[in-house]
Image (cartoon, one colour):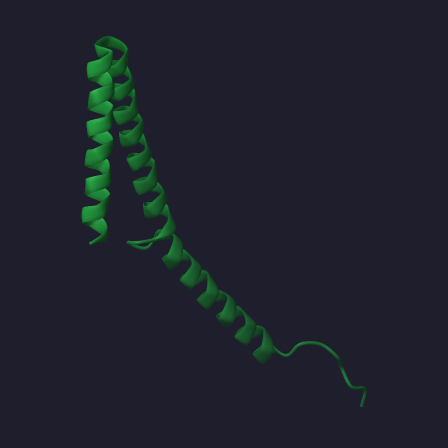
Length: 88
């Protein structure tokens, strides 16, 4: 009898199962509570808030002159203090 070459049904099923497991892990990483999508949304919100803060500071500087510079320095000091509090 002639020997046939090719993949068996068992090998095909095992390959499909492994691929399904990989897909499930990938989806959970992307969409989970601390997943990539949520992290990206949080980063976008933080960026928007910081841009608004920066715009407010720029407007303050534009209208208040020296007082605006003092406000910016104080704001930076507050941000550094907040960052140090988070690290501790």
